[in-house]
Image 1: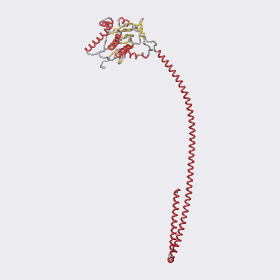
Image 2: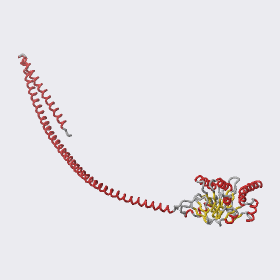
Image 3: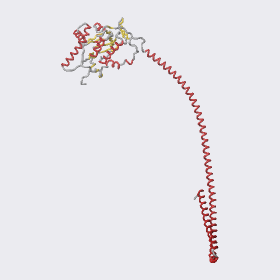
Image 4: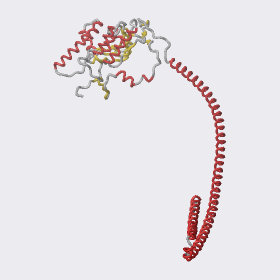
Length: 435
C-alpha cells in the first residue's frame, strides 16, 4: 500500500510520542526505586541489617531493571532507526513523487502552452484568411456595384427604348384603330331623302331582323325612347333587312312606341318585310324600301287547339286583331277592310299578298322607293367575324327555342297573344303541350 505524505507524518509523530511515553515510564520506575532506597537508608540500622538481604535482592532487581531498560532503549533506538530509515525512504519517495508530478505538470504546461501557441497560430491564420476574404469580398462587392451600376444604366437605356417602342406601338395601334373609324360625323337630316332617290340615315338607327319576339320588341321600344331623350328633333330609323313578322302584341308595342314618339320614326326595308314587319312598315310616319324589296301582307294566323267554342273564341280574337291592324292598312290604301280581304285571296290562295316595293308604293304599303342608302352612322370598319352563318342564325332565328331537322320551334306566348308571321313552308312551329 502506498503511504501518502500526510499519513507518513502522522505515523512518525505517533511513534515518537509512544517512545517518549515508554521512556518516561521507565524513568519513573528508576526514580521510585531510588526513593525507596533513600527511605531504607533513613531507617534504623537494625532494619538495614535485617534487610541487607532484601537490598541485595533489590540491587539485583535494579540491575535487572536497568538492563531491561537499556535493552528496551536499544530496541526503541533500533525501531526508531528503522522508522527514521522509513521516514527517509518515504521522504525520498515523496520527493520523487513530487518531482514526477512537477515533471508531469511541466509536460502538461508545455503541452498546454504548445496547444495555446498552435491555437494562437491558427487564430492568426484564420484572422489573416478572414482579412483576405473580407478584402476580396470588398473588392468583389465593389466590382459587383460597378457591374450593377452598369447594368442599371443599360436597363434604363433598354427601358427607354422599350418605352419608345411602346409609344410607337401605341401610336401605331392608335393610328390603326383610327383608320377603322370614319373621321366624318353622322349626318342628321330632318328630310333624309335626297334628290335622285338616295336616303341618308344617321346613327339614330335600330335594327329589326328575324322574328319579332317580346324581348326584341322591348329592345326596339327602349331604343325609340333613348333617341327621343337624346334628341327629339331628328328622325329615328328602324332598318329591316329581313323579317317574317312575329308576335302580335310585341309588334303592337312597337307600333304604339312609333306613334307616341316625339321624333319621327322612319322604317327602311332592304330585303323583306312580312306580316307584322309589313304592318310596321306600312303604318310608319315615313317608310322607304329598295325597289326589289318585298312587302307581304296577310291575315293573322295562329297555332291553336281546343274544343269548338275555344276555337271560335280564338277566331273572334284573331278577327278583332285584324280589324284593328288590317283596318289601318286598308284605310291607308283607301279601301275597306272587306275589300282588302278579297284582294288578299285574289292574289294568293293562302291570302298572302306580296309585292315588290315599287308596286307596293303604288298600293301605299311603302311611301318611297329608293335607289341607294348612305348610312352615315356606320363609322367603324366592319369586322368580318360579325358576318358569319352562326351570327345570321342567331340574329334571324334567335326566337327559336330549338332547331331540329330544319324545324324552328317558337317559344310560347302569353295568353291571348298570337304569332303574326309569314310561314309558307311551316318552318316555324310550336310544340304541343304534351311535348
